[in-house]
Every structure is written in structure tokens, then in C-alpha cells.
Length: 269
Image 1 (cartoon, rainbow, N blue to C red):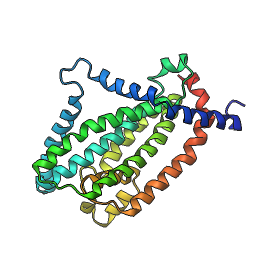
Image 2 (image 1 turned 45 degrees about the vertical axis):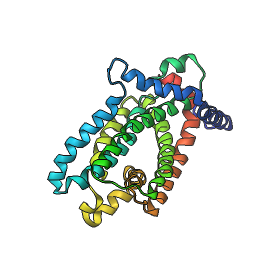
Image 3 (image 1 turned 60 degrees about the vertical axis):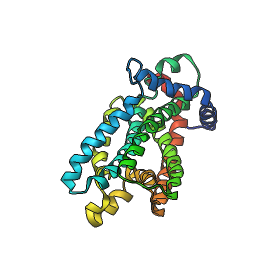
Image 4 (image 1 turned 180 degrees about the horizontal axis):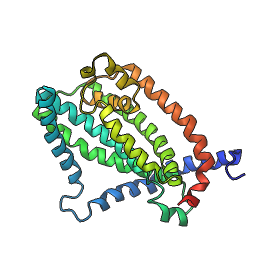
């Protein structure tokens, strides 16, 4: 049967992972080219990524600082870090729905590993994340932020996010290629998740129930793992445990799903 999960399917999937992830000379230029093309005719080019993020943080930050009755020098750095990390997560989720569709010309002509196009999505969004990080030194400088050794914990947090992001983009791209309504589901989910995740509000504002909004929300877990070290605080150990559980669940679901339907992608385009 075409959809039976056999040892041969596992072998092809394993080879796809190894060759695709290892082909950095293919997916790295792919992802960087996407960013260049997006701002090809713009005078400021890729700097618009940082500028637009900075404008949003400044405008919304002052507004919500007044609404929440929080001093702007406390709220703006908090919002800036959270929002920039959120853009990374939401960007990967949004782009995942078109990972194979936008590469249909390559998929029909070349027998490249499918995971190359997943890595392309990650490169594109990590590049945007790097551009947005340029905003933070200016905000920290204005509001007197002090660096901390805990900032080094950004690295393991980002690694965990990228692992989870890779698996999520992989399964989402497959589902979006097979079911063309799936991108709308992803977009609607992200809209709700944005308000349910402590991006613009702090868990302390929710009282005791705030714990559940953080520890039962995958977006909040990875947000805290990266945002807290940037602010100079070490994340709680439970957040690392939660991230590990999420990655294990994704592995259990994504790997057999990819092995079974990897070869069907071209026919779904």
C-alpha cells in the first residue's frame, strides 16, 4: 500500500534528514535570498525589519504602559524582548504553511531532500530575528539595562526552540500541502495564542492562574526560555523540562508522519 509505513520508508526519511540538514550550502543561501528579495526595491533594504519592529514597540509600549499603569522604563524593555521572540516563533509557524508550496518548482524538477525547505524557513526567520535584536541594545541603553552572565542561557533556549520549530514546521508544511485549509487554522491559532501568551502582559498580572498560562502553553514556555535570559534572569528549571516534553511529543508524532508521507508531497502540489 502507498501509505504503509515500512522499513524502506524509514530509510528514505532518515537519509532525507541527514542529507537535508547537512546541505547547509543549499538552504543557507536559500533563506538569505528570501530576505534580500523581500526588500529588493527598498532603499533601506533589510533595515526595515528593525525599523518596523522598533516603531511597534515604541508605540504599543507607551500605550500599554499607561493602560497597565506600569512605568515605561520597566514595561518597554519587557515588551521589546517578548515581542521579538514572539515574532520568531510566529514567523516560523506562519511560513511553515507554505514551505513546500512555495518550493513547488524545485520539488517537481529536482530530487532534493525535503528537509532543505524546512531549514530554509528556519534560516529566514532566524535572520529576521537577528535583525530585530538590533533594537534591543538601544532600548536597554536608554533604560539603563545591565548585562548579566545569565544572558548566556539564551543559547540553549534558542537551540531548544529551533529543534521544536524544525519539527513543527515539518509537520505543518506536510499538512498544509495536503489540506489547503490548514494555513487558515494556523493563522487563527496564532491570533489566539498571541493574547494567551505573556507577550504584552506579565504572568504576575494574572495572579495564581498565571502559572497555567505559562506552563501549559508551548508558546509561553519557549518564550520564557529565551526572553528571561535576555533580560538577565535564569529561566525556571521546569521550563526546560516542559520544552523537553514538547520536543519528545513532536518527535513521536512528526517522524513517523514524515516517513509515511514524505514521498507524497510532490503529488499534493
